[in-house]
Length: 418
Image (cartoon, rainbow, N blue to C red; front, side, top):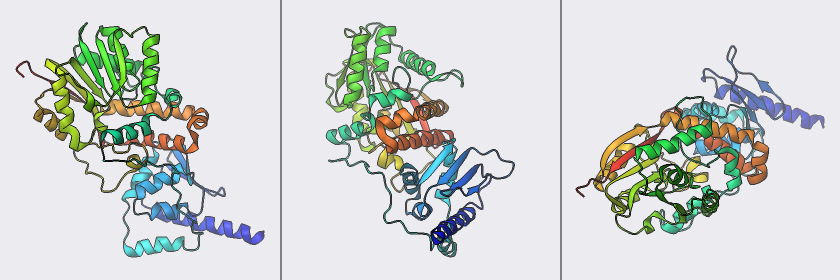
């Protein structure tokens, strides 16, 4: 027993020395480190700690730090409970950036690896037990249906824990930074309708309508006839139920339909797409904009809202955690490329607005609401899925804050001359 206790304490000391050496250049170090046996390294002196990084296994760091894809390995370590984070989850990503970007010479790497040489080697690398396994050609109809189902069909009850009352899973609009999420999402719905200059009796199409909040709002408040389409069966069920409850069945509907299967040239006065273009795929953007263009009547407006990769940010050379476990087959392009595809399809660009700061606020609301519902969320989707979504929401908020991601409202016109 004494020998075992000594070995555990010895491993703890080695890992702590490794962590201290690993983080020697990080300033300010606004977090504490706690090891599996209670060993504690407080935050830098005179710095208010924002979180505690708990390392639950002596071998966890070796797997994460020396992986060929450090970003994914660090995320997996958290999701599989090799690491725990107590406190501000968004603040963790400054540490993650430091660890991901850290470069060592061959000598330095050997020295660091040597510090963990006698720490037990894991029997296997821990990875989430259900990653994404999609079948078929990328961005084929069937594969897109699988990808959408993977993310959006998790559970309506799970999403209801942390989204607003209308289940808006897209960027809210904050007239004041301290506005609540329900009010900010209601403002977003009205903002979109006003941008499109919706008029009573017009026919509106919402491509990728989610849980149908916008079509219900536009039909009720602006008197339009609205059609929403989605590839998520659970979203369809929720939307249809609430359309009936609101008494809007004569003015709006939601269908399970791929945008590529929409027919009927010049069928709509206005079209909106919020948070769908990220799933289209760069190779399909010409088809996406051409189809919308054909569906619009001359003089019709198209509001395309989506996340874009910042123009100064290079394409990731390896798959990210989000690619592998959150949004399979998702693709982000800079706004300049998106506008090029739109103009090539015949659209005139009338307005472009970046709502990056609004999306960070939205994500922070979602994150806090999810964390407040942690026990219920874990009962619904399990520990692993809860951790995956907590990580994804916090990381997205951080990326918007650091200007690595943008959120654009792009207003496009099909001119009367077309």
